Length: 594
Image 1 (cartoon, rainbow, N blue to C red):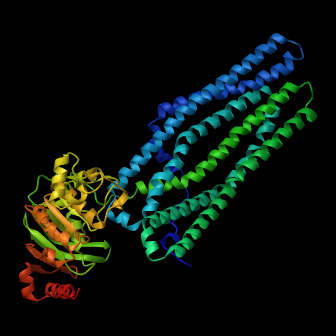
Image 2 (cartoon, rainbow, N blue to C red; image 1 turned 45 degrees about the horizontal axis):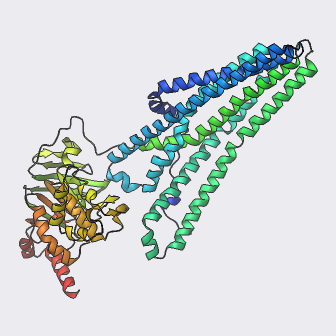
Image 3 (cartoon, rainbow, N blue to C red; image 1 turned 120 degrees about the vertical axis):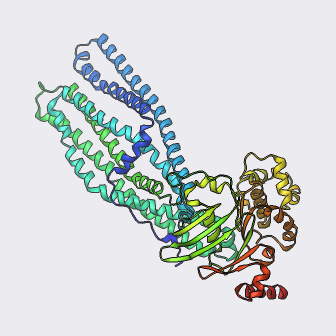
C-alpha cells in the first residue's frame, strides 16, 4: 500500500474547556453594539410571536362560544400584527448578523494571514502548505457562524425558554409541569453523547486536513507525477485519504443525528401527555379546550428552542475542533521577531561580521560551529562546498531568517538581533535558486521589491540583467500576464526577472544563492556584464554550482565540517591544492568530458 506523510494524523487536543470560546470573545466584543441590537430585536420578535396562543385561547374560550364577532376580528388582527412584527424584527436581525458574521470572518482571517507572514521558515519547512491553507479558508468559514449567530442564538433560545415558561405558567401550572418533566431526560441524553461527538468531529478535522494537504501537493507536483508515471500510486493514496474522510464524517454524523430524533420523540410524548392529563385526569372546570390548545402550542414552542439549542450544540461541537486549530496556528511562536527595544538599522555600508556563530536546525545537530569571519563593504564573497555543508545557512543567518544558537552576526558593527527585521531586510537583496514569480504581469513582478519604481526604471533594470529582449518579444511585453509561480515562463526567464527585481530594489548587501543555475551558458556570458553592474559597490555573497562564475570574487570560502575549511582568492586556493583545488579540478575535468 502506497504511503506518505499525509497518512499520519495531527495529535488531538485536550478536552475542550470553553477557554477557546472565551478567547474568541475578543472578536465578538468588537461588534457588541450590533449584536446587542440584534438580540433585542430577536427578543421582541420572540415575545410578539408568543402572544399568538393567548389570542387563540381567548378566541376558543370566549369569542366563539359567545359569538362575539367584533372581539374575534380584533383577536385575528392582533394575531396578524404579532406575526408581522415577529417576522420583520427577525428579518432585520438576520441582516445585522450576516454583516457581523462576515466581519468576524474578515478579522480572524486577517489575523491569521498577518501571523503567518511573521512565522519563521522553520514553520513552513515542517508543514504541508495545504494543511495551512485549510485553516485560513475552510476553518474560518466554519467557525464564523458559531461566533456570531451561534452566541446570539444561545442567549435568545434561553430567553425564549424563559418567556415560554412564564406564558405557560400563566395559562396553567399543572400542565406546565408536565411540559418541564421532559427536561431531565434531554439533559442526560446530551451528557451521554457530548464527549464522543466532539472527538468524532476532531477526527473529521484531521482527515479533511490530510486530504487538503495531499491535494495541494499533488496539484503543485502534477508534472513530476506524470514524469515518473506515479498516477496509479497517487490514486491509491488519494482514495485511502478520501475514504478516511468519508468514514470519519459518517461516524461524526451518526453521533450528531442521535440528538434531534431523541428531542423530537420527547416533544411528541410530552404533547401526548398534555392531552392525556388535560382530558382524562383534570376536570373540565379546571381546564378548557382553549387551555389545552394554548398549552399544546406552548409545549411545541418550548421544545423548539430545545431543538435549536441541540442543533447549536451540535454546531459548537463540530466547529470547536476548527476553532482549536485556528488558535493553534495563532499560538505558533514567532521565534524570529523584533526583540523588545529593537532599533532601526540606519543606512549601512555593508560590513558583515560573524563572531563564533553556532547554529542548528534541530537541537543537538549543529550545522555550523564557532564560525567567524569579516567581510568589508563592497567585497564579493563566494561560498562553495558539498551539498548540506551550510552555505545557504550562512546567507540565511545574515538576513536573520533563523536565530543563531551562539555568537553574533553583525552588520557595520551592529548586532542584527537587536535591530528591526524590516530595517535589516529592506537593505538586502536575495536571489534564490527557485525564483518565485507571482500571478500578475511582468512589470508588477519586477516592481514587487520597490513599489515606487517607474516603468523606465523597471525597463532599465531588465536591460541590465539581459531580461529586456525576451520580455519585449512577448505579445504584451511588460504587460504580459504570467500564471501562478510563472509556469508560462522558462526557469531561466524566471531567474532573469528575479535578477531585475533584485537590482531594482537597490540593496546594500546582495545574496545570490545558486541564482544562475537555470540560465544557459550563453545567457550567463551575456549576464556577466549585468552581474558586474549588480555587484558594483555592494557587499555580495554568492553561492554557485559553476565555479567559473565565482573566479573573480574577492574571496572564496570553502564550507565543510561545520565551518570554513579554506578561505582566499581563486588563485590562492588553487595554489594551496586543498579542498577547493580538488573541487575545481573535478569540475574542470567534467566540463572537458562534457
